[in-house]
Image (cartoon, rainbow, N blue to C red; front, side, top):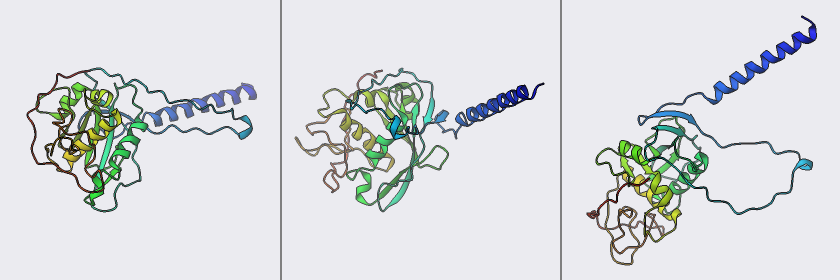
Length: 266
């Protein structure tokens, strides 16, 4: 074989080997949770900017809200996001949590979703404000005290156990389960923007994992305690997603209402 041909053949073999190694690295499985199969861990996309002379002018545009779509019954396979070195809170017991998204859910970027969860749980009005808890998002292969799942309605029912309703979110043991139908649509007549409802559902269900029980509305026109079941009704209170809304603990009387649960939706 001529020298030029041998070099070409060797280069081709090397390229195939590198490509195979990269593919294997990208598809390397991560530790599976008790709830189902893990497909892969999803990280932030990175890119190297071109040299300054080659950069094109940047046009500012208004962000477009991407529609969230999902089946009622998902596959039970999960994408986990990498963790963070940041710890929310300065004192108290450290609780580590993982974040998983069911693979059938479209319109929710895993990295952006993880940032939203960290932002909610790290908010100065959240559970770390009282000095009892610190919270840290960890990766799928690290020890964790609980896992936050964004699940399709049917997978919500499997993870939550008990009565299947396909509508609410829940906490079951170390599972903090966010129903994607609620994440996408909130609830009718909630009286606050979608972001506020999302803050509520994350803080409420995490509150259960931290040992908090349900509470009642303390009076008409007052903020709802975050541990009131605001998804099912406000009972004269106004929406509130925080346990420390003004830097001080805010609670209502212990108890819960006998509100009916709407039919599950997709």
